[in-house]
Amino acid sequence: MCNQLATTVLPAGLIGPFVVVYYTVKTWKTAGPFGVGVIYLYFIIGTIMNKFLVSPLSKWSARVELNEGNFRYKQVTIRDNSEAIAFYRAEEFEDTMSKKTLYQLLNCQLRLMFWRFPSAFWMQFFDYYGGLLSYAIQYIPIFLMHSYDDSTDLVTIIANNAFVYIYLVNSFTRMTDVASTAGEMSGILQRVADFARCIENIHKSKEYENSAFSARNSLESRVEPFEDQAVYEIENVTYTLPTDFNYILLEGLNLRVVKGKNLLITGPSGAGKSSFLRILAGLWDLKHGVIKRNLEANEVIYIPQQIYFPTGNLTLRQQICFPNLTSESFSPEETSQIEDILKILKLSSLLVRCGGLDNPVGFEWQETLTPGELQRLTFARVLYQKPKIVILDEATNSLPTDMEECIYNLLKTNDIQHISVGHRSSLRQFHHLELKLDGKTGYELKEIDVSL
Image (cartoon, rainbow, N blue to C red; front, side, top):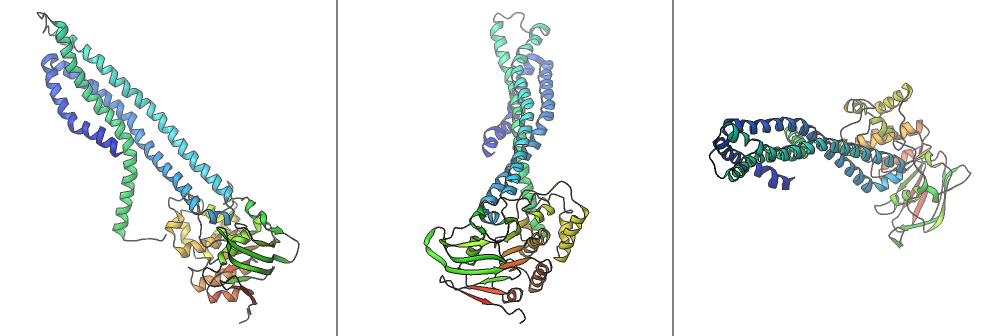
């Protein structure tokens, strides 16, 4: 854009008017006011036509820039949140939304090309027929004004006059050509102006806010199913860092998680708590041992430490249903259920901010909502989808203890078993068994007296 501005727009805008004035005077001397009027009329007609053809270019150029930005941002967020997406088993959802974003971009680019064709056609037509006009104007001084009846070198005079006329026409055509370039530049400038306007509004207000979908199960194929009352059966499991198989995080773990019994995983930072959840999700391989799971993949929801809300102008309903793809129609009971959940989690204000459940929003969720709101909205997903078990990685660390208690009581009321990673002592009352990792490949397993 800066190159176009420096080499095309500014030279034509600064020098063009002086060139037009100079050659207008010279044309007046040879072709008179009628000749000048013909050239100016030609320019006015060209400008009016250009106005109608260039205006849509500006609009569609801005839309292409917007959709290119959305598409690139979508790919970046997928790359940066690949682990969280794998935890949610949201590959199909992200594939669908990425294709939708790409389709929107290609559709805008196609429409921009449709508008570029008539604009380019008229620009070329205007440029080349201007050369013919410079010779047609010669009719005025030769046949109407009889200025050269006695001339002995008429050919030279015609050539010299044609040079003057064609240069005047060319000066006008260069200015109209600039309009086409400026029309496409204005699309980019519109995006920059929108950004500057947003920055200005932020400085004025001084307010800063912190900032669905059947999924494939290929990642969990390494977790073996079995028939028993246990949810998970973990036998002599040892796991390491994927990048260093000699760096053992936990060695010889034997654990049986029974239905209805909630597990709390504790330990110092770096002990391998989140890594254990990656093992359960099938994201990391075991060094040795066996993990058996008495659940279908869609009966488990993982809430990773890095909360993830997909981008792409999604609705509030889509975010709550994530990673399941929503249908086109919804029953009043489903809508009422979501609204009740939002009310219990003190998120009713989101309905107003989002313009309802099914209105695509113009903001990015992770950049707009506070960490506490994001965590509560994550639990809205859990309460709406009602899995048999939810695995939480410090999923309440941004919430006050009263809201934390409310959420765990809601999980109990809805018969949703949970495995939690956390440091808060307040979490103990919601669990029956504690797995404490010591950070030295060892562990301690003990019962929690929930009556205390």
